[in-house]
Image (cartoon, rainbow, N blue to C red; front, side):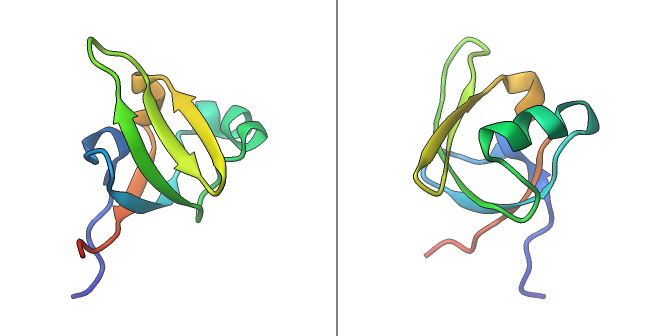
Length: 81
C-alpha cells in the first residue's frame, strides 16, 4: 500500500509535506479564503511552542493556522525522501 493514512496537520513535523484530505467543517470557508482547500499540497514550516499556531506553506503563500483548527485538518503525508 503506497498511500500513508491521513493524520492531523498538527502531527506533521516541520519540513514535511502533505496533501490536504479534509478541512474541518467549521473552518472550511475561512481557510478557503486564505487559500487552503482540500486537495492542496502543504508543507509545515513551523509549529510554534506553547500551543501557538502551525505555519504552513501552500504554494507561495504562508498561512498561520490556530493549533485547534489545524487539529481538525486531515492530511495525507508525502513519502519521506
